[in-house]
Image (cartoon, rainbow over all chains, first blue to last red; front, side, top):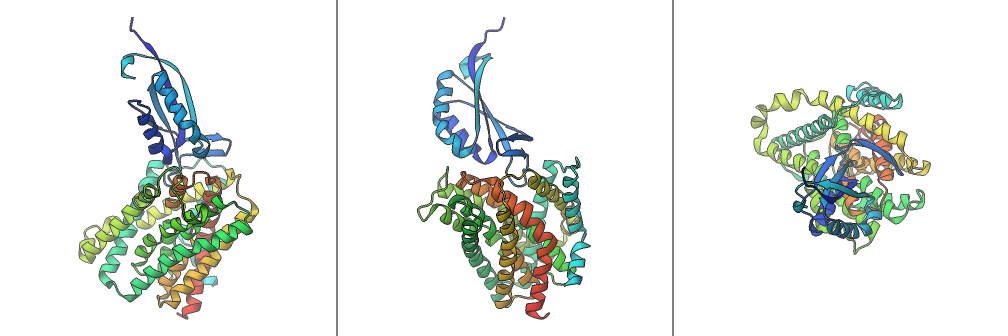
Length: 102
Length: 323
């Protein structure tokens, strides 16, 4: 039986332009890694959007795994920016192997 | 005038753009894959840059080139001031959104310029190669003006420092490639360009057609989804390119540019950015609504310029110069 531990999976749906700002906050929270995942289209309160990389207006998911403590530190740092930058922050518990890495 | 309009509407470049608009309006599933669209835009930037550089290598840098550059930079700083006033009063936008939109209307659209160059060349009024350098020089000043209008003299770059934001603007891929290819063209000269001519000349018009098809699709789909643009803003998105185009063309004629280059300066003044400036404004003014500035510049002004205003500006340059 593989041993797993509980960690927080963090997902941030954001405009690609804000990725450097957000990943800097992830680094500052002491979280060791993140992954950028492109997304193609969607719909929100502002209406529909789709990937338009020529104009640089496309969105991405920033994914990361962290301990509860670091995830909360990140959420506190990002909360004041959420209205201005208009990103979506999700967190939930996941089981991971090699938990000491996160 | 009628002849100019006919030439515009029978140009394959314009017809492909119209096809893109129609396809989106009838809800066709036609799409250009994003990596291909990106590759086409890189090709077009490199081609227009290198051809401009080669043209300047041939003609040299003289007083005409320098005065065109100076006129372009001054226009880049000044045009947003007028746009801001109109957007605040008639458009009823708040300070932040008015500043963000004004920056778009002071800056330029490379694709509008390239389309205009094709149409003007078709009319035997090819703009001078140095207009590519003028175009590159006009990209940034309007961003500074727009930011100052939106935030005041003590402006900071929104979520990032002003220096970081300007770094983003000046190292934007389109600017780097355009200016880089321009310098390469100047260094290589006509002889060096011969070796790469088949790649940059043969495919240029065809790729521009496909790129305009994609832009037509994007412009129409964005306006179908538009929620933030009022009739007042739509009217401004047509009014500003008419006024700015007339001012730019007149300025070009006043400083002694030939008709094609004067028209090109008019087109640069008339065009609104939808590549470099939206990215810069998203960083610098994240509170501003991209649904307003992108829809105005891409879905109203861009089609208006391609379909109508380029022909008007071309006719004005002929009228003013008498050529």
